[in-house]
Image (cartoon, rainbow, N blue to C red; front, side, top):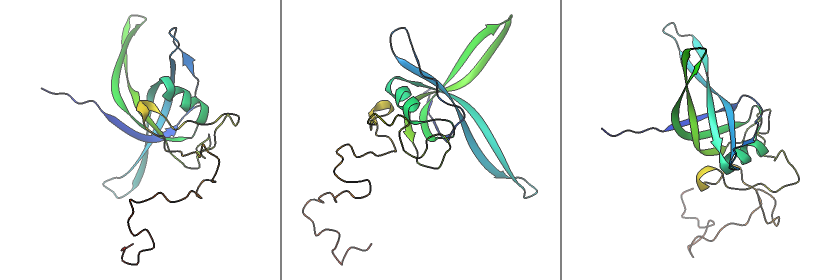
Length: 168
């Protein structure tokens, strides 16, 4: 029988990110993610329920997260579930966590850096996150046009956006 192990979560980071490195020099960090859910009970009352999930980020994704995100930052995580098991004082313990394959920074007014501004003002942000996917934050590396003031891209020699027959 085939298996499929994918998780997609959108939530807020619960604590500041602490970046560590393995002996081989690979960046790694564990972040807490709070995922909120709202549902209606049988009596018609709304209940807010928060689920806390531990997420492990590796490599450049971990470095980007530690540089630009903090407590309260909204992010989207795509990854896989992994079960950790260990023994403490003779008792077997286990914990389910998410190993991140792709992280997307989301804009928002989160308290810890969700505004899209880098926490380290002296460096240029990258547009790469896990898996070579572009992040949700966009930065103009060239400095020619301020954000939101970029020139339109060519559309292949068509009539263009001022054509009155375009229905939008």
